[in-house]
Image 1 (cartoon, helix red, strand yellow):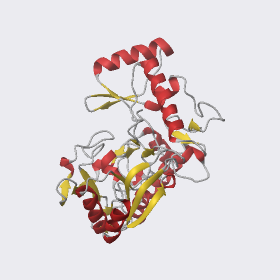
Image 2 (spheres, helix red, strand yellow; image 1 turned 135 degrees about the vertical axis):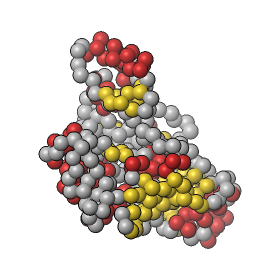
Image 3 (cartoon, rainbow, N blue to C red; image 1 turned 30 degrees about the horizontal axis):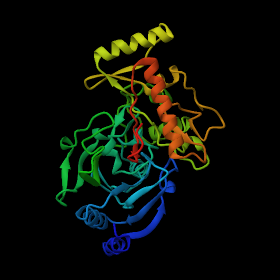
Image 4 (cartoon, rainbow, N blue to C red; image 1 turned 180 degrees about the vertical axis):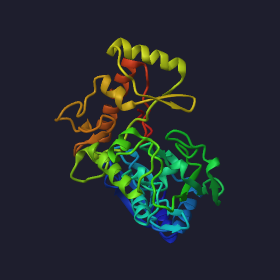
Length: 365
């Protein structure tokens, strides 16, 4: 890669380009080495032009927006990091359209403040609007896929830009056809919301209790948003620069979905280890969803593991979050993730899968 020539091309395409740019400050885990080049794109047109240039020349490229679901290696990224810095949010007749780089919680906050409901259960989730369909993000009984109308994509093989329906995204539990794939880049998302200011039906027991509602009830969206934010803050899941429990990628492992035969084996292992206990389990596509956080704690990993002197620790508020206590490296976090994963597998026969994208070919979790 001829850095000087490529830098000029990206600048001509409208990006703000810098060399050897540190990446740690662009991620919520606050770890990661520098990018050979960083190209910041403030408009969708610039974003499309920049990615087309890079793809045409087959330059190694990492797309980065909110940085909330990524763990970048200490060695950095020997290629071009494209920063999605588009921020537009538009509302029209119960439809919200957000640029990929818009801060997701800003989208939710503005929607609720405008008297629109449906997104409030997804309050406080870090990251960008463009990442929400990739992960099919969800919380408190609501997934973004239930409100998506369509998504505008850049096809990176052809360079074409088009809107695609939700049915083309292959949405599932914390996944889509966009995840772990460079085939397409999200440019905009279009969401259908309620224009009566009422929340989505409350389906999560903890949230129902917090607002004094029965499961299935609706409440004013603003009231539900406040309750969700309070619950998330109690678990260290709302970004706060002064709280190291929020220096994380959120839930580091997805809740495992197991088939009936595997479930029987897992429940047997739990009974052998813990005796007759109630195991949180929920119906899911093709099987049963178990609680990763519950399994982690019952495998012996307590909040704050492995202790106060460790640079990378489980959150002191929530065992599902791996946190940087201030000077952790990506190697520290990967080692902790492997310890937790291996311990849960040894205890219960379930292999937890990481939710963040891990950017380094030499490390696997």
